[in-house]
Image (cartoon, rainbow, N blue to C red; front, side):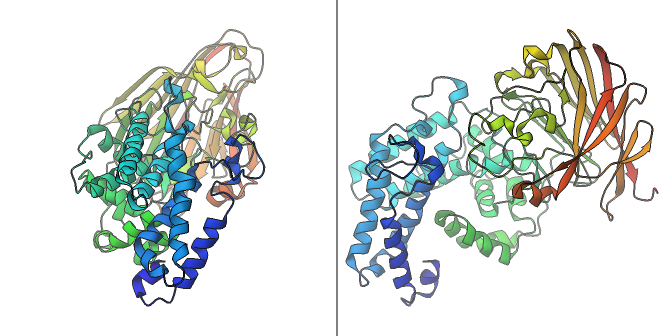
Length: 544
């Protein structure tokens, strides 16, 4: 379709017509993983009950823009193609959207923990595209847009004022980014009369993505996010342009290339692909920009409670630290209240694995059988042999953040993230960056009783080398300002075990390779009360 728009010689019209007709012939536009919401349950799709999911709506976007751009040119192939395609968009998307209350619309949510996730803005943006482009009845189009706006309000009203996306940067493009898609369409359709971009919340939602940027394509990977997240450049650029934020635009354009942007247009949905192509010259003209690399960020809502800090503004040299409190009922939740990450010179040292490839288990009652979702495979303690539990009440308490020119610090009591069977009275964790010097994580705890093994778990992609009692060395790639990091602890209190964790998952393997190491610090003597501190210090590149 894009090739026909460029060439305009009719050479691709047969292929477009054949593909469009084949799409219309599909029994369902909903993917199998989501078909279970039909009354007939899982299995084959019931053609008498259309389900509006992410990808049914996404298909409508492809059909709608095809009709908009080359619809009349298809009539010589067959006048039935255009009519059939419009009918299918109405039957499968627009009519059920008006007539049914799908859960993702948010109309049935009564509690904060029921607030809609990225499905809401993502599907609404797709339906809005179809309503504006395909629907010909003015009254019905207004009804559709009004319902979309009401549904979007259900997504935005409970959103934290600081713009923190608890689904993480990997989902931001379909959460906050889809909010932009909706607002962009409304701005265009009303010729700028409906302009929500000056709104403070809308601006903060956009800024989230550059605030959680670590270096290159590394982002703070909370929840089901990959640690490496490709920057959807045009989406971020458009958001930065809409809210007039130069930092957001700089993240989008830094290092952009023609080949990359053309490939991006071929791998995203048709609506965003059109923006990518039309904005191509603007993005490439700013490719010499430097990403903002913000020194300090505090996202203080109870859903996130995230500190981000680095040694210097605008530089990846030295330490980068992220730590968060939050709770264990986030969208795409991992049991990770109190987790922290450490990077040095833009390279991972202590990490969050992210989410493995989705399977039937991922969103089932067996979700927390997956190691990457468990607290023992985050940089967190295991208390009396017990891990954190899932749920809104399993959360950090008494969370405090402080930042100055010399340091950044997050303190919290994470005891409530464990069930009562862990027998923990208090667990005060303090994560401190002393800029240019060291990172320390101090755990001061008191147990009601010692009923099992208590340990500290640390995940690193770098095979540690025992350097001395109480001291491990984590090497960095050559060519960096620092050759590595020392990882030290009190050898009188603790002993270190090194466990190789095989990553038999393609999604994790793409980021970390075949395996990572879990450093397990165990007490030499069982104790109900202690303070354990781990310190990471920089090793200059000239050191042996």
